[in-house]
Image (cartoon, rainbow, N blue to C red; front, side):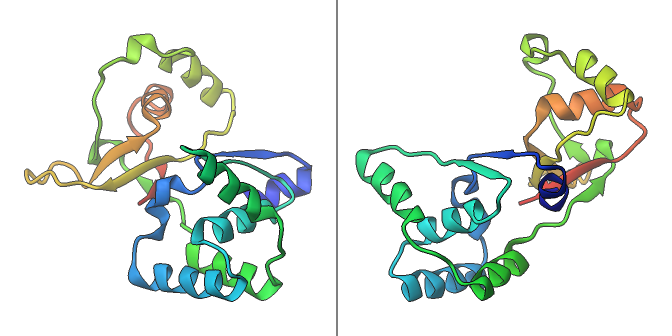
Length: 176
C-alpha cells in the first residue's frame, strides 16, 4: 500500500504503528532490531518509529503512557537510518496479505449494532469499489478444527465484507 500512497501523494496514518510490540515475534527479528538499535545507540522502539517515518507518506501516531515514553518517541527523529538498514527492516518485517475464507475465522457478532458506519453501510462502499484495509488475525486456539484464525482487529470490516460478498469471497488479512 505504501508505494501506491507515495505515488498518489496520499498519507497513511499509522495508528499503533508498533502493534504494541507484537510485530517483534521471533528471535531473529528481535536480534536484528537489537543490533540496529545498538548501532545507533537507540531503543528498538526508536528504530521502528524512525523506519516508519522514513516513508514520506507515513504519519505515525505511537502510543505513549508516560512522559519518559513521550521523550523516547520524540528522540526517534534526531538521527538518520542508513538506507541499508531501512531495506533490511523492510525485508524482515514485510507481512504479506493472505486471503482467508471467511468461515475459517472465529469472530463474534457482539456490538455490531453500535458501529457507525454500520456493517451494511460499509458493505455498500465495498460494493461500490472502495478499498478495505486488511483485517488482523492470529492462529486460532480453537481445538474443534472449525477455525484456523481468530479475529483480533477489524470486526466491522470483516462483517461488512461478509455482507458485501454474501459470505462467499475470502477476505484479505494480516496474520500476526
